[in-house]
Length: 106
Image 1 (cartoon, rainbow, N blue to C red):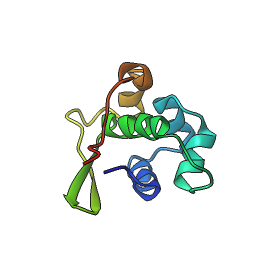
Image 2 (image 1 turned 120 degrees about the horizontal axis):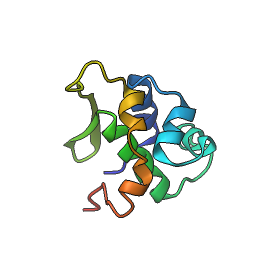
Image 3 (image 1 turned 90 degrees about the vertical axis):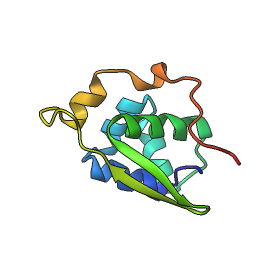
Image 4 (image 1 turned 120 degrees about the vertical axis):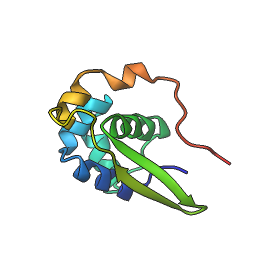
């Protein structure tokens, strides 16, 4: 199941990230993050996947709870001294997961 714009915005807010921060961590433009969250334009699936990977790396888990719904869970960091921004800035996420497929199309 594909992450919806509402899931994206809720997860970003749970992590206390600005659209600019999420854009930087996911390797996409701020305009793409805002366009997706606000449903201003169609955003390519590859952009959504890059954002999804960044959110998961920061500690968000998307759980499929039935055929038509996702639940968002923020996981605690093993090291409470690490902030979300420190965790995310450790890697350039987009280049580390170029071929990762995050959703089951069934």
